[in-house]
Length: 261
View (spheres, rainbow, N blue to C red):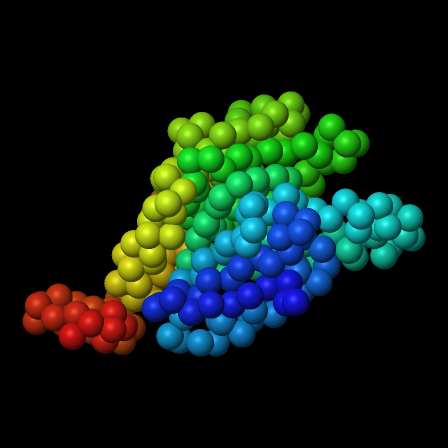
């Protein structure tokens, strides 16, 4: 059985974590499969959005503890390589040129919560739960910490990292980790509606927008930043995609990338 399943739904590729017997624990095989799929899908122009989801009763319960126990016995250098694999995957998701949506149901614990934080958007079922239990078993949420701080804000990240308490989907929505909290029966429909909204945008514009947001997120508002952002617009505006988008707007038609006439 494949540990990752890929499904096309219109302009989106849905990547299903498929280790339901262990609540989609993130072992090395699954991490490698995710990385390979992201590489392949980046080259496919027809795929405009990635949806990350989980089979079975949970999105992902986090790291594979059996694997971690084995890793603890490894030499330090090899243990570091094991950890860096997940760090690279998180960075790949966070900087991916196409929008990535986390579709969350059930548990999103530890590394599973980190996956959500690395995504661009998080849509969660009302029954979903998030948790960072690492400190309770003598670990720390190391590789996921940069994404947690950005998604939750430093004060809330401090609380949930240090307490290990569970966070319901409604509260996760209130503090900003989750963008939409919906009944479980409407989860797929909510994700697909959001995919449709994103697919209306220019693919190059989306990639540039993601880079721009990452750049300005922690930057001070200065004359240099003002000049840099003006340069970004000038460069994008001169591209064929922007010219097509402006022509389409003036001619009251859909641009070529929308798939609509």
